[in-house]
Image (cartoon, helix red, strand yellow):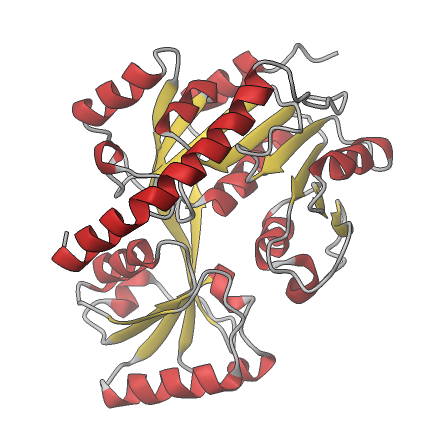
Length: 347
């Protein structure tokens, strides 16, 4: 860690203490039933983070919804729809079709709607209202509450937390000094902790997490690349075509370093990189600047994520060398069994 980052952390510690106090008091009220959680009448699986962004939550929600659908459930996904250009409750998908474009749905709800089959997707800052709509109007018999670990107003049966494999839990700090949304002791509420983008967890990290919550189910969530396609034509290319190519990788993610590392492994070269704020809505001026940067550095391709692709302007499709990477998380059988063990018996 650089001296500048250390100094910044020290300056942020008083604000982190205030943030920790506020979140701690709120959790105390829920833990002691001073504030009440509201039941939707059907099982709810919460999928969330204890850190700010960058864990791969959206592709996991997609994989979870599709598995539940295949298992015979009628799932619904309720989500806030962060930075969408719409107000109130919005039905993004009604099982059979997608009803809203990305700008109105929000990039993550739109991606969930695009990647799921026979799943209702509702965007609403009031997740209780969204849950009621999903159950009463669309017959959902199980709900996935996206990004809801801290949204305790909604009662849940299973709490799944994703943790970025590159983030050291022993050096984690509360916002704004670090990335934690609340005290690491909040993991005492979690049922499952899935370490994303890896196939192994060190014994040191395992012991650290188990010390916080001995009953915690802990497993990995390996990532795979399912497709690399041309944004303009939709043509799919094999990963080998990118080997040793000069690449400009760009994204607006909570943790851009993970994406850049993925591209480096994919191409065997260090990419030119450009990061934007999370959920960034690109303008044509941004794209023109990226193209100039790519040309200046002799890049063969510009590569981005599917989440960023839905935030690009339509005119981007006139640029012939932008590629989009799609990723997938596979839920192993032990993790599926751990989730099912927390759900009430099916009637």
